[in-house]
Structure formats: structure tokens, C-alpha cells
Length: 171
Ligand SMILES: [Fe+2]
Ligand SMILES: [Fe+2]
Image 1 (cartoon, rainbow, N blue to C red):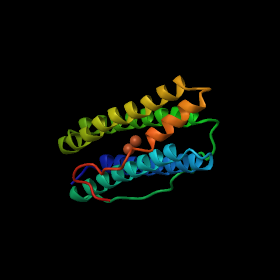
Image 2: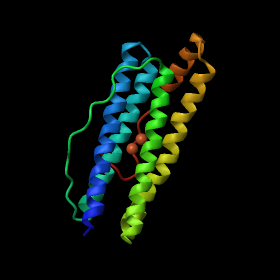
Image 3: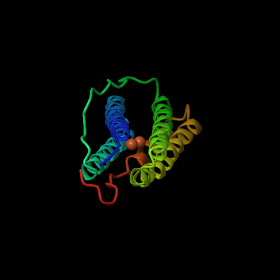
Image 4: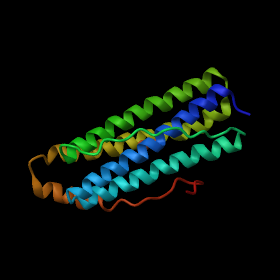
């Protein structure tokens, strides 16, 4: 069994992961609307990754005899000023998620819940990658501000990303 406080905190995080997916689908739709197909595709892969994060929490809750409780997902933004603004928000969002994951680890430690703490380490590592990949795109876009052919190349490159579910996770 899992402590009630831990259970509630994970349910809150499941909502955040769903919101993350919703936000990235919204960003994908924005990119499609400005004909940046590669960026749009990158964002859909990102959205699918977030769903895999939901599923991983979902499965963990089941294995600990906890109940998943869904709640309202807030509406994401739908318009942005530029591709750079989208990726800057992505980076900011991932930094926020990192601090939420750290908060969950703090609760697990406080409750001496070693199983949940161990499980959460996967997310701790994942957030390092999430911040790095968003940060890399922000850097490339900053270097190519006011350079349409640079943006074209970045869009092409981002379109190469494919979705691979994390080990042991099925959607
Ligand atoms: Fe996530
Ligand atoms: Fe993420």
C-alpha cells in the first residue's frame, strides 16, 4: 500500500503530465498552422512522450494498490509569437516539471517510502534529458533568429525525431 499523501501527490503529477501532453499537442497545432511541419512533428513526439509518462505513473499506482483519480486538465495556450517563443516556453515548462518531480521525491523521502523514491529516480533522470533537448532547440533557434534558411534547416532536422516508448512502458 501507499501513503495517502503520496497517492494524492502522484495523482496531481498525473494531471501535470496530461497537461504537458495537451500543451505539446497545442504547440504542434500552432506549428502546423504556420507550416513548420518538422517542429509540429517534434511536438507530437513530445506529446506522446508525456502520455508515456502518464502511463508509467498509472501502472505504478496499480502495482502499489493505489487509485488513479483524474481531474480537470487546464486549457493550454494556443498562439505564440514565434517558434523561439514556443521552445522557450517548452524549456520553462520542463524546468517547472523538474521542480515538481523533485517535490515528489521530497515527499517520498519524508514518508520513508523507498519504493516510490526508487521509482521516481527514472523521472529525475528523464527531466535532465527533457531540459537538455528543449534547451538545445532554444539555442539553435536563437542562433538563427532572422535567418529563414536556418529555420528551414532546423525544421527539417526536428522532423527526424521519432517516438520510442520508454523501456517497459506500453501506451
Ligand atoms: Fe513528463
Ligand atoms: Fe516533459
